[in-house]
Image (cartoon, rainbow, N blue to C red; front, side):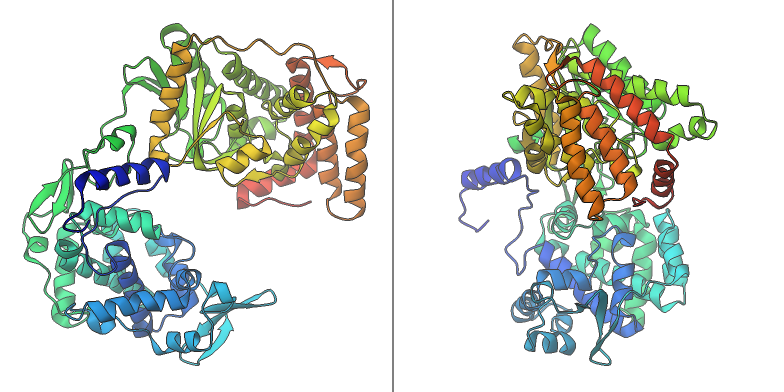
Amino acid sequence: PCLTSDAGVLDNLERFLVTTLGKGVVRAKDTPNFVANRIGVFSMLATIANAEKYGIRFDVVDDLTGPRLGRPKSATFRTADVVGLDTFAHVVKTMQDTLPNDPWHGLFKTPAWLAALIEKGALGQKTKCGIYKKEGKQTLVLDPAKGEYVNAGEKGDDAVKAILKETNPAVKFKKLRDSQHPQAQFLWACFRDVFHYIAYHLADVADNARDLDLAIRWGFGWSVGPFETWQAAGWQQVAGWMQEDIAAGHSLSQAALPAWALEADRAGVHFAHGSYNAAQGTLAGRSTLDVYQRQLAPARVLGEDAPQLGETVFETEGGVRAFTSGDGVLVVSFTSKAHAIGPAVIEGLNKAIDLAEAQYKALVIWQTEEPFSVGADLQSMMPAFMTGNWAAIDDTVRQFQNTSMRLRYSLVPVVAASQGYAFGGGCEFLMHCDKVVAALETYIGLVEVGVGLLPGGGGCKEFALRAAQESRGDVLAALKDYFMAIATAKVGTSALEGQAIGYLKKTDTVVFNVHELLYVAKQEALAMAEAGYRPPLKAKGFPVAGRSGAASIKGQLVNMLEGNFITKHDFTIASLIADVMTGGDLEAGTLVDEQWLLDLERKAFMSLLKNPLSQARIANMLTTGKPLRN
């Protein structure tokens, strides 16, 4: 805001930005580059300076400063390429021109090698050449000392990567600082210089430490803000090390740490009831603007009070937690790893449906964090798989299907709130709910082909049913796109694309702010309940494309096989999918019910599970996390 900005206009703008655009809002002080760019670009400049000081290659820097630190894959130098080197240099020049009294002013300049790249038009990703460039399949990276490109792909040293895997932040930072390895010293220096900068400038650039951390998390994609990182590592320990480095001339500036940062009893800047405001020496609470009442689970910072959402009704080990806030809605969340769906989740979800039907107005399926679900828990099937206990696996698949059908025909409305990945069985659960409230960034698809299987929890059945309902007499024409979505494991890379493919219905709701998911899902569920919800009538007697429809699809698959677009096993899987979705060995137009297709689906799923080629795909996915083409 400017000094004369109207408070009401600002509040309305914030409401619009939060709900309609789905953004996180920080009200910045009017200083150059505001909050995120001021700190984020400083961090990049400090990283560049320390990389030169310790002689770390650019590709090694990117290997060490990306996901290993909870930051984007683009890390440091790739981020500059993505942003555009000219744009990055422009932001740096703003700091150079407008911050003459900043103790780090000497750092605010474009390195000679960067200026040379810009001079010859190598501006990064938009010109296909920058700090990195590709020649054929080979990726090259600039060596600034030589002034030429060298083969990229070098990684950080294993000993340093082992330190970064340390789960205790205090231990991790002590190991980094104590290590004599140049890469470890480089990492400590990068952290130290950013901590130094944010402490020195907090009073100038942001209203409080929470705003600064959230700005960096939202604006630069860090999973943890810099103040959170410092606090987690032990405020006093890190502050002491910084003092030593400043005194020894190791840091990028000799500016003294502010007095508040060195208070003897200081444990951090984020506390249960607020975050530190350095200008006033007080704790600042959360915004009381009404739009934030829609965020039942807002983004929180380390150390902030995070009250338990609702009162727990029941919880099962490795399965689900069900809770309520006294509004008549039972909310159920999966507690398994990546919210994978195994026997414990299926059992817990059925228990939640029973309870909702008996005592509540509605049921909402919502996860406390993304993903919604990565799908069926194949690992849980391994004991039965190894002993050849096919009957047990068949029973698990049957229970999975029955759970999908219970979601569809429950006596109370069932609304799912999805975010992140919703793959395989997770997607099938969404397809069977009365309504889905999907965050815009929902990545959804029936991806079972990647592990040599087909959707076994009702996905094939559901698409066949939808095709029949949409067909206007030509079931096969309506079915073909749905078939291709499953056969090619097509993923919708947003909720809107998920609607276009058909995983989500056109009537499903898409919300732009992920923190509003639970609120909107509850409102949708209550609206249905208050409107006198009745479960849909069971679909009895809908037409299928039959054996002639399957033959038409397989004819196209033969062409794909002969053209080497698919493997023989791909052909086997896709042919089985075609058989299931067209209703099996029946005449075109034959009327079937949902159970008929579910039985076909389960039988085909089991046949693939017993196939050695599918078993190889499953094993490869479980061991490497990547699909196998065989």
